[in-house]
Structure formats: structure tokens, C-alpha cells
Image 1 (tube, helix red, strand yellow):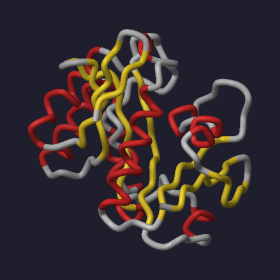
Image 2 (spheres, rainbow, N blue to C red):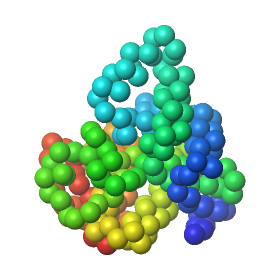
Image 3 (tube, one colour):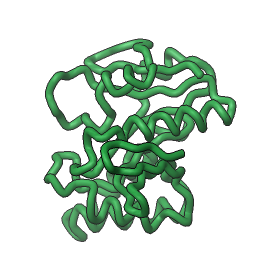
Image 4 (cartoon, rainbow, N blue to C red):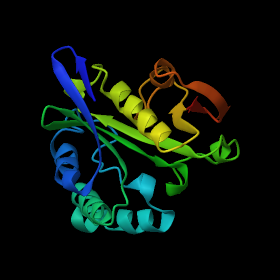
Length: 201
């Protein structure tokens, strides 16, 4: 499906092995060019357990943060442990959304969300949009594709886990409440400054 925002043609593609090079290219060259506090990142943590994250962090001083994160990302991609969607402007990857079955995430789905289930659920745990493409509807296009695919696969709902804050902060990668509201999500439950935004399919 294609979306037009200003003069950009945004195409959303599910991550497949054929797109692994594009995934790495996005995080290598475009994801954090504005010195965002969440970078460098290759979106590995949502799909890692605490022990693996500790092992990875332990290698930062030896190999450098970015090189270590990239190494783990390559290993995880090779084992299909990272799932989600890439956004393209033509052939250029310009955005990413980490989204998959709720059960595939260890620590990135809040426990209070798991205690308030809504049937089989896809969780959206992370967004990153290239700085020059923010505000152009890329994240909305990603959400739309996640919801359409989840419905086609028989899921009951899609959830996001937004932080309740009016200011930019280290948790912006979850996506703001207004982004989910615009896509037809409603608040399901909140706790400790975080809210489960849910769309029943």
C-alpha cells in the first residue's frame, strides 16, 4: 500500500530476510542523525531477555556501543528474532516500527498490560523515523499497516505503550498517545505514567 505525504511516497514493508540490509542501512545512516538521546540503537532490546542485554552492555567498552549493538542486531536478524516494518520513500528506508505478537517480547510489554488482556494481541513497542521525515505521517502509515496485517492474521487487537508526557523524553520511541488516538486506538489501562493504547480489530 502506498501513502502520499507532501511530495513523499511512503511504502510500508514487513521486515523479511531480503530487507535485512535495508534495516541495517537505516540504523547505520538515517535513524539518529539528529543526535537523538535514544541513539545509537538497532532496536535489539525489545527482543532480548535481561541476561542477553547485560551481556551486550558488558561489551560496550571493548567494542564500542554502536558496533556492539550492530553486531547483536546482525546475529538477531540472521535468526529472525527482530520483527516489524520498514517505511520507504521510494527505495530509501526512512522509518521503522518494531511490532509482533505480544508473547514475543520479554520486558518491553508492561506487566500491567499483560494483566489486562484482550485476546491474541500484536504489540507495537518501538518507532524510529529519520529526522527529516518526522511529521509527514510515516508513523501513522506504519500503524495502519500493522493493524491491517494483524486483522488479516486473526488477531483480536493491536496495542501500543505510550508514556504520559507533554515533553520529549527518553521514551519517545514508544510513540505519543495522540499518534495512537489518531489511528483509532483508545486507552485501555494506565499505570505509573504509561498507558496501554488499544485498537480492537
